[in-house]
Image 1 (spheres, one colour):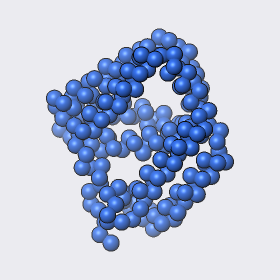
Image 2 (cartoon, one colour):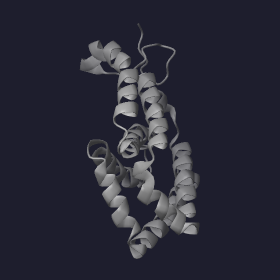
Image 3 (cartoon, one colour):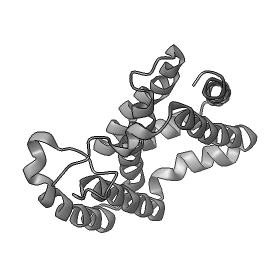
Image 4 (tube, one colour):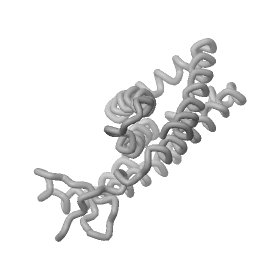
Length: 197
């Protein structure tokens, strides 16, 4: 089989990635700014959102299956290099793990699913910014490196999500600084995407 040399992520323009990322973050931070109490309650109770966790977990494993599915017609197919012989087994294990996690590990499922989702999502804008000319492209990994670090903790130790969100939402000054910094960062991403990328 002739494998794809260019992954679909590599064809995403930096400008598009920046606009989408900046737009999504702007909406989220703007909502957190306008509805602080509702946002705090949602963050503090998110670890118990089993249904949302199951839904997000389904997206995670569907996305993973698309990355593993071996077809020239699949633009999301990823190279496994030395693990290529395991592709079929990994693809078969996707629904099994999804079913087991979604039905037998319901406690703190949402943080695990969210962490996994962030790990899958990060590669899209990070690939768009990889080795590009404008130095302002570094605005993208500045947000994603801390997010990826947190995501790995949430997958392995989901109770940390509960503890961190509880600690964060009880500190109004930290909440306000985070939200306003996030708004400024989102605007900076959008401005750079329009003017420089």
